[in-house]
Image 1 (cartoon, rainbow over the protein chains, first blue to last red):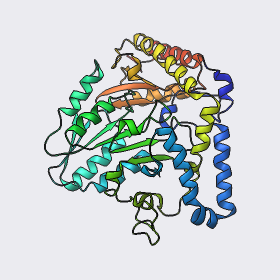
Image 2 (cartoon, rainbow over the protein chains, first blue to last red):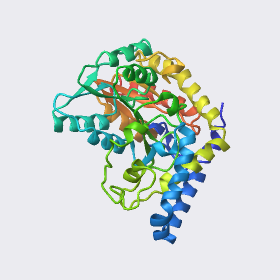
Image 3 (spheres, chains in turn green, yellow):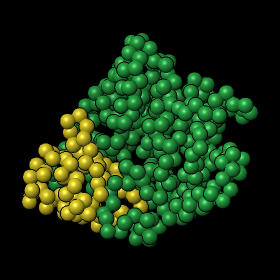
Image 4 (tube, rainbow over the protein chains, first blue to last red):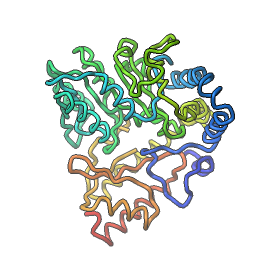
Length: 320
Length: 68
């Protein structure tokens, strides 16, 4: 069992509340939050130097740290405020046509459903939500439900890595392999993934991936990333057209120019990511995390028994 | 993180009751005509936190119509 009493001292969370909703917006440890506020002070101290001169190099350092953490090349990652931002950037860039299909499940995050429904409605495309039947018997059932929805008009598969309302891990690696064998690109919504379960983007090899750092990585709020495979990067337009579009002094990467320059904004949360990664290492967070998962697995069945309901998933490590 | 399938006709009131009467911050999720109580465990959570939830659910189920 982890030392929850001393860990609690590290957080700003209201001690009068039994806080069992980390999944929605995370919570940032005090030492990381202090780094965040220090960065904000630096920004106010010399705003021009900070935002106009030093931002690209500082963002690069933060992307390198994140790249090591999620096992991706730092130039294949750009910071966004939240996963919805990433979904909107990619969705708008796909240039769906009438009759095209975006294939997904019926257990996705509501805000992402709304974004895809909007893009489909605008273009006359269809949002195909394959039903996932409960109780789920095994991961292979889910792979088959998704893959059986592929048609000649499927433009993209969009799928959660860990679902939101139903809170379990989907077999994204198998879905990626099966989809890519059929030439269908895959976009994974990993809002709940980084810092929660191990993430190796090189190995997983999705076409697009978005993850929130402000949940289980415990960074300040408003820090997330969009990953795109090298060969997909040129297709994604920036959500906000700004100086990085058709840049006067382009960097080595159009992907970075397009998505990193999004008008004046507070980039402090992005720059706090290395501190959050250091906090995890200093507090042996892999062990803490595993201990938390054991608490969940040990209690899940008894909560269901208590309420006379059946778990919708098997109580096995591959689902948690 | 685990979503407990629950039977409730008043998901919002259940969530409010858990917060206001028991000081438990926990979301009641709704999807495809089903309701779930999703609890997350992070390093600062103790077994007492889960016991507190368990006792609150027991009491709510016996004393109100919020949980079938």
